[in-house]
Length: 235
Image (tube, rainbow, N blue to C red; front, top):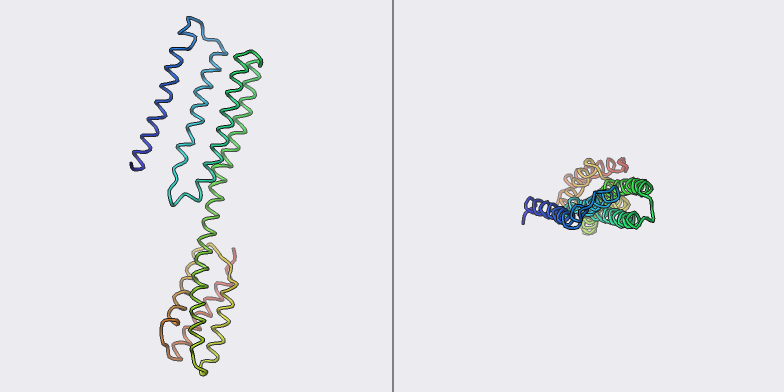
């Protein structure tokens, strides 16, 4: 079942639930008993529909894929907890109103307050939760790229150890580069990612090739410039 088919299936289930509520109203409502529809009856049946819709709606926001797993898990959990609390509290209000232990007008005021609180929790749960998830995903991506740079320079350091004494200055420069990279902090920008990729390529070229002194000096000068540029970038 693809995404569109799943969406249609969810919508049909949603409508089927309302059909069940309509059937219950037709069989158990005031009209079925030959009674008039009172304000309390309206409050109960309208809130039954609202509770059903509120409890079901998170299903339309919980489509989780490999690309959205970091952003959706947190937000979906917050939404389900908030809506479940709202539904539970509303059902208690319905019982209180039907048993005349709470006046209808007070029940309406309490429900409005609960809905306002729910809206705040949904906002922070969905929008803020998504933002936090996106930040965390970006942070992990940046850390992964930094890890690749450090691995490339570890291999470069091993390669530098095999160079002869005539490359003493170049070996010292490479050792300095490795220290600089070791303490490099992640920065989530396209410019940082571009510089880091160039550093990886330059380090791999030296590690996997036998370069002449001029070519090695050119690569070292290139890496020196790239590392200086990368140090200037901040979070």
